[in-house]
Length: 213
Image (cartoon, rainbow, N blue to C red; front, top):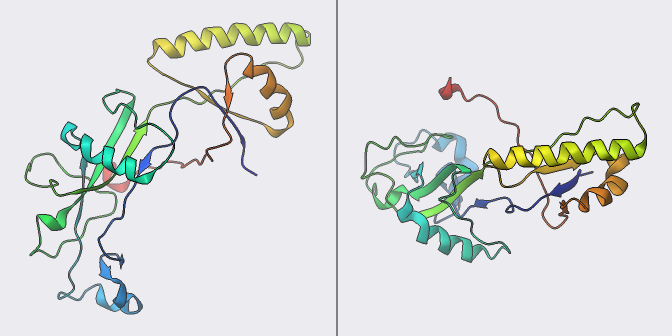
């Protein structure tokens, strides 16, 4: 069962992903060779498809606008100059620059920005991560009356909202436990929270990458 998802404003999840290659491949191998994939991985005559991941630059905006429009999803492309976008990576087609080279992109690698000639091929997609916050409420159920606890919540809510805004955040998300989701959800909607069941949330736990240590 997916958790009840309540959000206050903000944009939907952003993954402007396009096809990674012009023809179906597995790890850069032609589709017709899939059955022999393990044996062909070391074949020097096999032409690998090279994809280049680099930092987003302002000159990429028109290409991303076109990809966003082609996807046809019902949300507006956000302002990528917003500092809350802490990760902005684009995927460029390296074949346009290295047609005579057999190269393979290491999974998870991004480019150093020293070579300006690299990564200037057609843009195939982008991954954009915007900073947001998850709300936790700890309120002692043994203390006070229900009315008093509601007043305490209002005081915490107002203070936390001011603090989050002053820190530069634009929205906060909350996942409500199933036993209280319906009743408590109705109460916090009066405080400006919006329930969003039209977009299905997923969570990905991050771990240290070997190359980042």
